[in-house]
Length: 245
Length: 340
Ligand SMILES: Nc1ncnc2c1ncn2[C@@H]1O[C@H](COP(=O)(O)OP(=O)(O)OP(=O)(O)O)[C@@H](O)[C@H]1O
Ligand SMILES: [Mg+2]
Image (cartoon, rainbow over the protein chains, first blue to last red):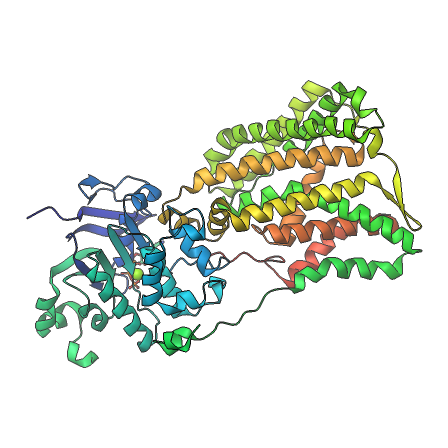
């Protein structure tokens, strides 16, 4: 078996005086869609931020494409091919939607320099992006901002997408739109590590699943296995899927 | 915009387009409010042009500082040093070209003033680069240390200026063709003030163009709002910051040349004096906002001239009062920058 695209090895993360991650081990295989589940405060966001170099793993290793990026700077990690959709979406609200996309498209110097075919594809996934192209992004609704955040992450092909709770605060119709978009993204063989609390969302997308608690990975396996095993769900997530449908 | 694209109805709801136009009315409102208080229309015209000229110069000086704060939360109280440096360089360059500055030919005057401005910008930019390396970089993220060490840098800079040019006030006469006034109706308007307004508008337009039309400008605006996200998208904020710092220092050098010519003399303390005004301006404008800085600078310039004429005793406080009023209205300044 070939080595995974991303591998965290014994990652400890400290934020100020707090010890948040206690030795996280996690693998994300090339082309796989992995969902990271866990209750509030489990350390999911901290894990993604550590991969991005926004917090430092100390000690610990973060292997990406065979290179340890644990001590690299955030811009360098991004340039190695990781796109990040943070929990707060990180939208530049004073910039227009177009300008937000242009900032994300590293190789384009002007809006016309963005890959037109790819842009059309994104407009297809998220029609609101086209519609509000010239609008200040700060005027978008929460759901539209989330779409823009995801659109920004895929404006150019990246090796790995880190997405933090894209369903947070979204209306059901928009969640369906989001799921459809990620499904289509899966067709393109993009590797995704997605943080979710919404198991119903997660189960529709994930190939693999990892569950965190208290700064550690407490379970990892295939999504199918977890979906089929209500007892395991009860144990890990404190919920039964049936109750949430 | 065709209705067929409406897959998720809620996702297509049109956001309200509410452009914030009120601040744009502040400058004309202040000018009009002053009109009935003046003894004559011509006095008002003279003071208004003087105020706009002063405002433009302050804007040139302050615009870089507001971005420096916006981008890296760096409080640079040493900015004034670049103003004094620019003004003193103008003394030297224009002094060396006195043959041309004394000529009545506008072209020869310009041939002296332009190099003076370019030298001031280049040297101030270069010193700014070193200042960022040596003084600012070790104290990223530590406000108290920033205040102390940049003030220290300013004092050292002032002393160096005294060593090079001497401690005394040095006259900086306007080139011959810049002197005198034009008559607009009954009102006498000093030519140099009109020139200052034109240069200020040109700098504002150039900055506006860079910030709205170039990728670097977009990154600067994005960085002012969310530094971390810009880095997560693969850009090095520090590099961007150094560029902004150097450009801001160069603009302060240019502003220093213009301020020196406006006052027609230079002193080693001039930087420290202007420092107070520029901090008022960037706070009024909203830290990190170039547009707010522009409006704030014009308000400060106009108010200083109106009150200087009407009630010289309160002139000193008028700008503080202006700041208080603006902050009561908008605590984050005229154009609050949406920080995350
Ligand atoms: N900046 C910070 N300073 C101190 N503690 C923090 C900071 N950020 C997160 N933490 C703590 O780290 C722990 C993990 O937080 P994290 O945000 O990673 O959880 P999460 O799994 O993403 O939770 P949620 O589902 O609520 O987003 C929490 O106990 C949180 O209080
Ligand atoms: Mg989180």
